[in-house]
Length: 223
Image (cartoon, rainbow, N blue to C red; front, side):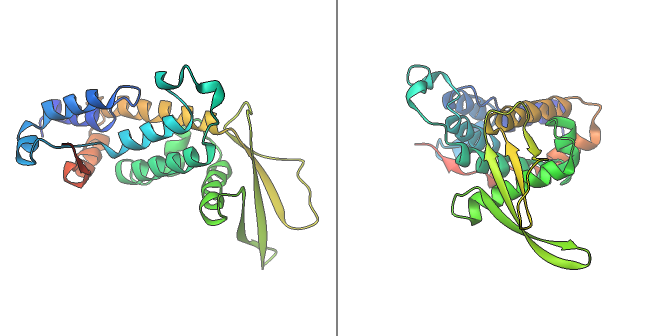
């Protein structure tokens, strides 16, 4: 495939979520005029663009919130779930499923235990009815035990860390998480990844993206 076409496809998939939807549509139509005509002047959004847009709304990011932000409450739980959707799908489909490598290289998460903690946080929200705890079965001295994992969300100066002073009389642990830092690091991380994809010397990475890229799988919308 022509390298310029690949570059444009990368730009479309990773379209800047800070821009308006109409700007995405204009760019989409400029790249896919035949498809737009065939599909009745309709268009398709990049799934990453939609996930990122929705996550930005959860964290009240964007000029539309400037005048009312102090009266709103960030939808941290929903934002965390959306970030998990975007992170897992993007890495599994474009980065050969190397979650730990992507987190280390692009999101400043260098501890596999912390990455697992984020996965457990998603589990807690989805499987514990939007609450900040979950259970995990682990091996301990050859025996299986049920560990209760808690989460504390706050304005910490890190994305996630396990509490070292957490002590209870039953098997448990606590992770401290800053949802806003998680969001900003996810955005900056996939933008760094995009820049690496635009580097023509990264042939293997670009080939992986090309194999994944399929606008037919995007949801049709429009008039």
